[in-house]
Length: 496
Ligand SMILES: [Zn+2]
Image (tube, rainbow, N blue to C red):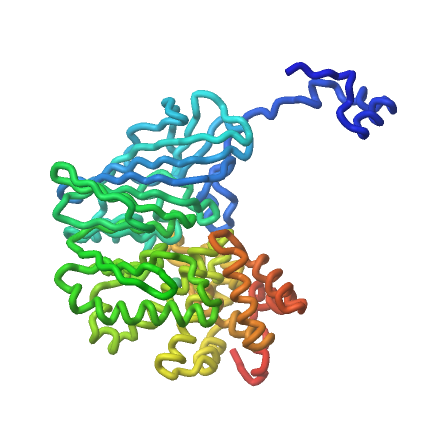
């Protein structure tokens, strides 16, 4: 469409013409094209600078996994739909291990190279700012077994692992891009479709709801839809000799449990008693009907690992026998992991230094569950944590600004004492300061306002102030960014 430069389109533009102002800017500069530049290799996370990728927002992930008959190899096709937030000459995905077979952008072959744990993709044509695009990356890889995982030295962030005829994943904080090419940061979470093809004699399960099953030849393909945005670190892909049982849960939720076939009878009754109880307990504290998922369940595997993978908590089968509930207090573990469906999964950390918002909350609600179920004293356990905290602040740095090298192996930073116990203690201090009723208002506002979203420490400080009408900024900052623990409100006699 030709531009009529003699017809200003607004009063302001007319005034500019009258005053001769438009003559100052050469037409070329005013309409300079935004030259395409490479997207950043990370989103600027201080603890994990390589995780996530700059220059685009992810709209959807599709992951298509196909396992070999012996489960020792797989292929993964990741399809990432995204929108460019700058003009892009090239962009990165996160990817480690695996062999790349093919990369396309909008269906056309793209050039690619690898550096460190980055896959660098150069589309045939640069992408304009705001342009939507689809990148597809096909990889293949051996599935690491448990011994190989130990050799990788990646702590709990191993990605996918095989244990006999079982597959499971464990990716916090940085293992998901060992499985497939992704933007591996919780701040880049997106709805996901996961398709798993595995030998028909085995079952398969993944985050979200089962929407299709198709048997073909010696394989079965199942498709799972996660309508909630899913952070790659919360991926769960299970394959193995398990049965999936379904039950109705509170408020019309669906509960589903993937249980080893041989142990299903022993595990199911207690698990299906505990899960709805914990869900109701959490809703008492965080708001009726507030549980962020319509479908929730547990993947009980012989390898275990206790992990809050979204909508499908990973638990060790051996901790789910009736005896183990008595010996280990398994229900408190369930309370911890289910509270992550709010804290960490629905409300995801903006940066990994915000991890205390995930783990501090999980430990806090776990301790409330302990008080309800076993009559343990929250005050007594918090006092014990208070005694210890200065030692950990010295070792790990402040709760919301942890030192990356304080956690070993470094790949597991910031999963240290402070994120868990220090975070819980901070929440307890806030409750002691504002009172139980105001604290519950903060918490329920937090999970409502940022549901299915991303939020960080500063967001929490702001929200706490807004909800209570008090300036809590200095108070919370002294807890979250201090090198020494402040006095516990209401307990001036506590010492650390
Ligand atoms: Zn946790």
